[in-house]
Length: 300
Image 1 (cartoon, rainbow, N blue to C red):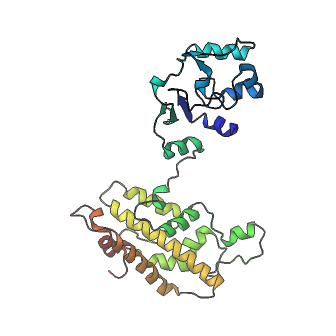
Image 2 (cartoon, rainbow, N blue to C red):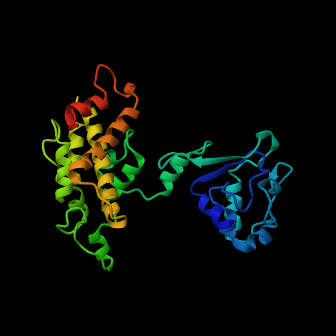
Image 3 (cartoon, rainbow, N blue to C red):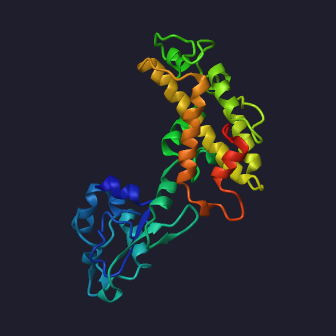
């Protein structure tokens, strides 16, 4: 209990009202912090205030009521108390305040977002975050793309680095060591799939995840920004389906020829774009589905 309240002290304060709910020893109601941390187990005995006492119990007839100071700690506390008005019922209930931000003071409302931002150790923002996380994403595809961006999928080169006895060859083309870059871009199977979706915006199959990210950044803020959404969605679906195809071949022994695989991706693209509201694109701009048909779809 003490450790919890002590850790909360960085995020929560108690603004005294009538002192009936604030704990004298454990709540952060003075600038000294929780007084139990300062005085230790001997504090209740030296100040003659019980361990579970409220702040109101340290007040008698409207004044602070503590025994004469017999230590520097007790003297410091009494000096601090001269700057704090004793709690009275007319002040209403005690109020607990939460830190409002890294540079803000304490406020009455609690925000889980702000508190999490204070608790976490922030890492630098990666340049590919908007390529993975965007409104039109498909969650399962975004998750696999996120892992591929971090190079955390259990590809065969990683399994070998962990000491596992597995083949190193790419299961899709049986040529080259299966790595993230090979599986999604260098593999002849993957290249054939990407070639089917090359159009006015993608002149040739991308060579790496970074090239797609860079290209999407170029499209942001331009008249072609909507095409960037289509390309990001296409990237995620191809990565997801290639990873799924790889696993199907390993664990189920089934496969889809490269010449037909693009139909799986195309169907997933159409289904997702059809599910989006047309109003998301302000008229007279074409819808995302129309952009897909015009710029990318092999069936257009």
